[in-house]
Length: 457
Image 1 (cartoon, rainbow, N blue to C red):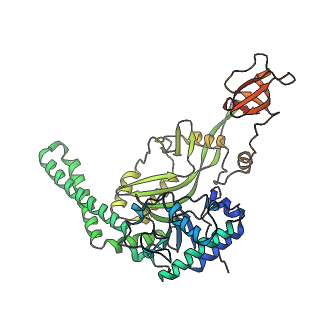
Image 2 (image 1 turned 180 degrees about the horizontal axis):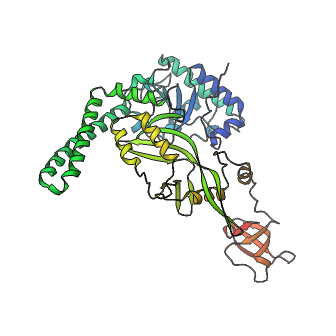
Image 3 (image 1 turned 135 degrees about the vertical axis):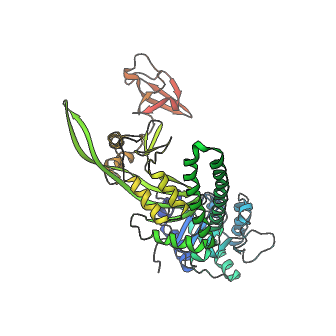
């Protein structure tokens, strides 16, 4: 019995999601096949270099686009040959073979001079398949073709005698991600030791700056002590500090990414008073405004805050009243953030960033709250809690008007017939990239222009 949909993480706007929805038989077939081996999720990655990804559950990854499945002959032998030659000719195996820890699953009847059908990364909970399980699902032969694909995979898996078992990813603490973090830690430690030498030297030679350098020296010594203590038991400390983050209700999850660690804080709104003018009367009203869906990345000795629902105003992108695409103002938070990063206190860091995003200082901001509120209102997309408004959805889903014979159009390049009211015409014919038009009620005289010069009204 199929428990859950392994394709649940796919975007509903993706071609794969729509194709699967159009052919529930194939979708059920794929669900049943992978869940038989214990897999919980299917993910499509645009990059084959996924050496930083680790999954908590058994997950199927695929990479190369495979949109023309139906053009292959559905017979078993010919399709198997097509799978190897046509499909894999577009794949870059430089990345594919760089992972020594992967268990390679070869075609069940041939191993010499052939590419693996898949690689199982046991310590990552990932089965990596270098093709996009999609095809043209609307084609009548799709089900037979998918049956052939899954037969090849099934027999190859049985031949390889590989067993798929979910592993505790905490056992993978010596993986590339942790080694990278450990390397960054060592680099930071060396940097602060080098800075300490400079600070001590400056204390002797710059008497006027002695107070400043004494403070820097004190801070550097403290950071070095913390980093050295951390480096003695790096893996245990990282795991312990990360596990503490789970107690924060506003942190939905964290994950390792190539740049560092990303923490998801979720949707945040802010409430404050604004002045509104109506009929020359100024009143103060308390309003609530949706700021965005936030996350932040911990990158070496710094943080990078990101907003999935940033506010776009002209050439500017505002992610918060204190942050835009040009700059971010942390104010008094900066020193505290740096201190918590140096001590790897992830829980306190998440709480501090969350508090920062929930705060507003009108004396030291990039965008005033009342402007942010009005910009968000003019956008017309979200309510005060970050839910997409029904009116926005309906507007977005309005069918696009079709350019066809008889349609009313406007010449957007400004040219046309001088006596045409408001530069509006009727389409009389469409030939290739040209549109023939005339004024409504007049005889067609063969006036034409490129199709991109018109808009349907």
